[in-house]
Length: 266
Image (cartoon, rainbow, N blue to C red; front, side, top):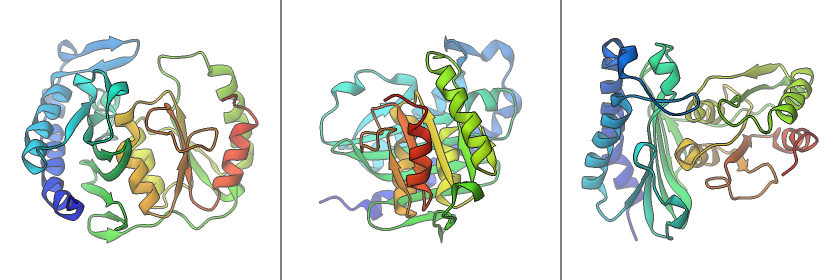
């Protein structure tokens, strides 16, 4: 049996140091450094070097674990039931490249295809969110909980807009219209890891997004759950990491999910 608490303790400095290194590179990036992986899918040497830093450090902490990482992803659909680090070295790359201070390092550890440990570090506010299975969720050492608000009408929600797959745009816009009328409003931060972390600590009452990858949500899912939230796919099922869609909330979850399902075909 592995010691998750020890792995978490040893991993947190690596995640934070990587985030601080990223922060120090903000003014060094130029347009010439930007590459396109696809439509509106940006990457730079900062993402790539941050990933290498994380892999090097985490391999020393837990050498038995494999890796699923954004900038070197391949074959994640074939992973087994063992331990895997799931890494987004810079969630919110577009924000970072535009010098918008909303981005994070996101690292999860999965076992049997479900996250058991998660860390999200947002360097602009020096906020380190983390959790391990059965031990609660924390922000800079203090325990966090999801919002106690139990009505969608009193909730502030977070989401992410389609940016390269627009096949579901019409139903998404219909859902946005409905949620605008039923809540305090919606926010689009541009980094799913931050959306999940902020929902875990009660800044948002709920979050949903489609067309995501495992590294977008692995860390945030376990942090949300350990903070008392519920996280599923749009059908209410547990397959979130590889399904590509996620909805998470505290007491408003059922009302939130029901509203989403009125406008979404799974």
